[in-house]
Image 1 (cartoon, each protein chain N blue to C red):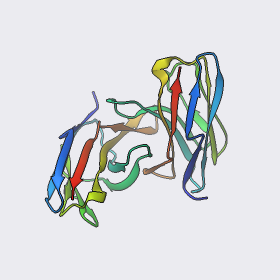
Image 2: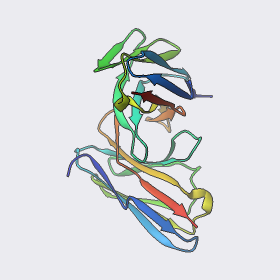
Image 3: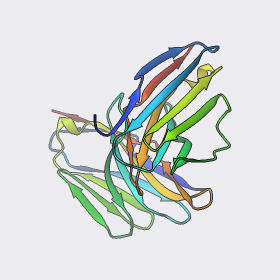
Image 4: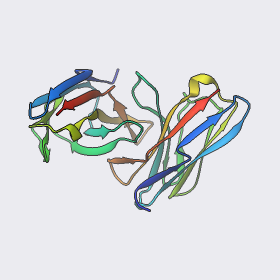
Length: 113
Length: 110
């Protein structure tokens, strides 16, 4: 069964304290892995797409990496405004020629000043 | 207005009411989605419209009825809902792989 597991469920950091979030997946026929950020009461905001093992992408203090079984979202010297829930999703075949996203539960990140 | 918009942002309804959620995308995308987000659960895909044609999802109860009159607009018609249907309903659109989300409608069913 296709599945996405994110860890930890919650993470509290001090401002400037770097860390990593994990997204492990089991899916038949990976068609891409996606990272989103979601603030309370808002819709998910797209961050990155990764398609193949070894691929890396960066945006400001965030860096996403991908292996054959998992992805990491590295946060370097976080600031309080990085506090949010970070969601991971993998794209898999669905309903013929279509594809769907399979979502993890997210990691809730809090960065204290 | 840019991106994906949803109205209303908040909705409270009784179990016998009929209401509709509206989504509009200003991105020129050709696919639109409805998701349900509940606490402690991953996002659940409800419906997909690709090139205005609906991709079936047999697991969604018939009290939810989608409508896609054109590539920019998507509706979710609600009737005789249950309290467990209370959730954040998210609309998204895409042109290729990446989906872009609206702010959601917080639905409470009394």
